[in-house]
Amino acid sequence: MMAKNKKGREKQLKGVLLTRFFFVLIIVSIVELILVAVTNQFIIPSLITINKYDTIIKIDGAEGLFVLLFVMVTTAVVKWIFPALKISPVAVNDFLEKLLISRGLSGGTAADATETVRQLSENKFAILSLIGSFLLVAIILMTPYIVGGIVFSVSVARELRALEREKEEERQQEEKRRYLMISNIVHDLKTPMTTVYGYAKAMNDGIVPADKQPEYLDAIMKKTERTNAVIAMLLDYVKLDSEGFTIKRERIDVCELLRSCAAFCYTDIEAAGDELDIDVPEKPLYISADNIQMSRVITNLITNAIKHNPEGTKIGIFIKCENYVTGEDIRVLIADTGDEIPEELRDSIFEPFVTSDESRSSSGGTGLGLPLSERICKMHDFSLRLIQNPEIKRYHLADEYKKVFMISM
Image 1 (tube, rainbow, N blue to C red):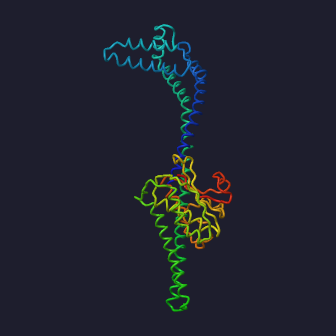
Image 2: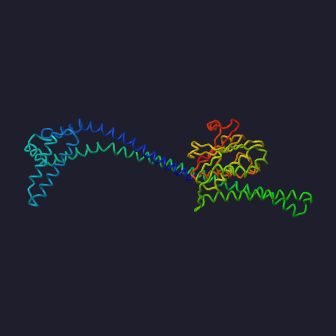
Image 3: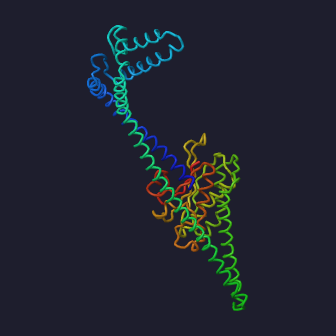
């Protein structure tokens, strides 16, 4: 369950990150387009006019401002480096001047461009004011990205904290379930052992009449069998989670598997006064599965129907298949006409030691049969789930059936 929740959290986190990222990206893009338009139309022309550069340069956008600064800085570097290298900067300056003209930042001739650059480069205050204007424009244009990054980081951090709280709550719930599981194990072992001890002590003290001793011995055997059943089921349940445990797949006929399990449980069905209704095709339907483990699943489900329903319950064993020729989408249904499982137990019926009985001892159930069966199905990549009214009507069973445990293969 913890692994399942972990995958769910990872999937949820990925979804949150992608959703928030694209949402912030869309908002930032829209705001950026608006700011670029406002900057190009109003802010930059205003800065150029305030600094009195409108008479010598023509800039109507952030791109033009950047190009001008680039040309000025490059020209200054060329003037400083090229004399030391004894190389003429004419070709470089010519390229830069043509760049200014192509961007519409100066007049129509190279002379105009050269004069523009000269006037600005000789005025340190002009350069500083242009740099300040450029930094102001850059800050304005970068603001949406900065704010968007902050909003995205804060929202993701908030979501991570929420997921951490959820993870901690799940950990605490898992601990509670573990403690409850231990408590239930102690209960299921202590109750029969207390009875065994009491009967054995009574017989050892000689207070049991001779004609009652067989009855006491029979009770001791039944309680011992109950204890052994709990221990064996618990060991099987734990073994499935142990490292190195694997299922042994082979090609088996699921129809023959159901018939074998029904035959194995038939004596118990008759002893409980129940009725068996089996509808399995004669033609084989093959699956890849562990024969022993899947036999355990089917037997557990049939036994569960016997133990947790009143006498006279009809137990149905069916196979549904979308395509009997190819054997695809096989579904095994173990249905019964007994009482439905209460709503409050439907979500926890596959958890250890959960039963529909007020006392597990009353029916002899351990509360491990369904969890064990579900784990085996998951190891096969099958699914096991409970189906009750009104969903059960989708599977075209007789109206008398109240609940179904369905294995999808």
